[in-house]
Length: 110
Image 1 (cartoon, rainbow, N blue to C red):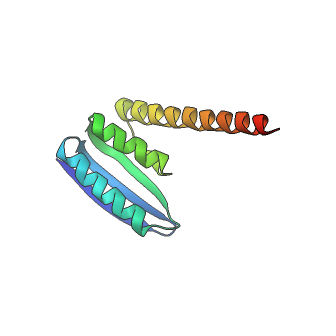
Image 2 (cartoon, one colour; image 1 turned 45 degrees about the vertical axis):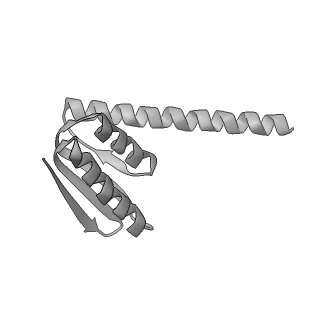
């Protein structure tokens, strides 16, 4: 089971997930995420994972998509911290590869 809450504060929106981000609950969290993206223009989005006890592979993919879209992931505990670190490292590596590809493209134009 997963509880999903959306908390609004000036300049930020907090998507709070509690429970297991797995199975059919990933689809529900994805629906809420898509709605937030459609509605939110300027606010920073924080995904609160402090009370998440388990994340399956589709849940991991959803969190990676959220991070790629600019959300900050916030969690605690060894499992969640490792998951967030892995997602952020993968994101940083992807950004680095894109910059290298841009540089190579610019170099070839010269």
